[in-house]
Length: 357
Image 1 (tube, rainbow, N blue to C red):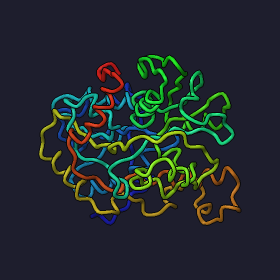
Image 2: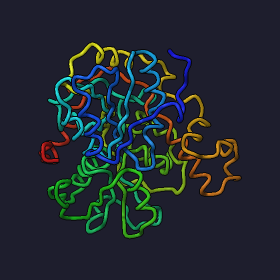
Image 3: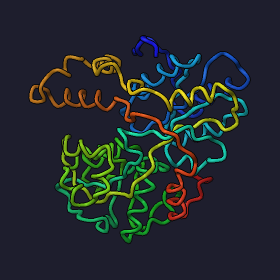
Image 4: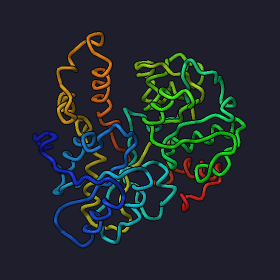
């Protein structure tokens, strides 16, 4: 592996505000032999600069394979899927996607591998409320407002809809149309959590466990879900962040998100990159130091050495933001379309037409 570590000033990414801008980048991929590969970057949380987060992995790939990774963030899950659908024959395109993409456009993508978090190949969706809420169970959410992730987010919206349906609430044609028994406000995992905390009119938040899990005391998981205790990489951090939230529901285990590629691209370079990722050492998924992340985010690295009681609320938020920019997965393992059958079955349970999402 190269001794050159990634830094914020070393790499210039093509930044895009959304799908239309990113499409310009993809249009130039087909047939060119300039040694570059487009990587469509799927955002999960608004506060995360995904280019900073993925820096170590991109540098590792470039050090192992004679290639330049051109990271292209999209606006949301749907925009990531749209970029993959735009890819033509021979376009050199990888992407990190939601598990739902495998069910939605499975014929147009190859599954490169599954991202695993510290040995865990599955993760969870949570529905939470505030500690002063009058909501005690999911059935109490009738006629209430629920904040959630993006409409096609598996952990942020789709699994929560299944949990709400199983609790007896009429979800109507959601996420394509409005639920009958409650109002659904979609955004992203971070925004859903923050809106619920700040706005008393929002009764609950549906997110991936990586967003709200640190706000829920471990005892609540112990009482509600042994699978979460045994499997979730987020369990060790339970109750580590303020404000405390009240747990309403935990989903069944969900296969972790994949890395995928354009199925219409057949080149040895694609195989070389895949093999490099599957055989990557631990340090390919870690920044050299939290101070490097802080500098990339224009945050004072000295805050990282201060005790929690020395930090103001805004400074603590900055420290948390640095921690959140650590790459959330610690490896990539072999996977196929079949590994995402639980997501396909989820869609069937909800009566989804993936092609219309």
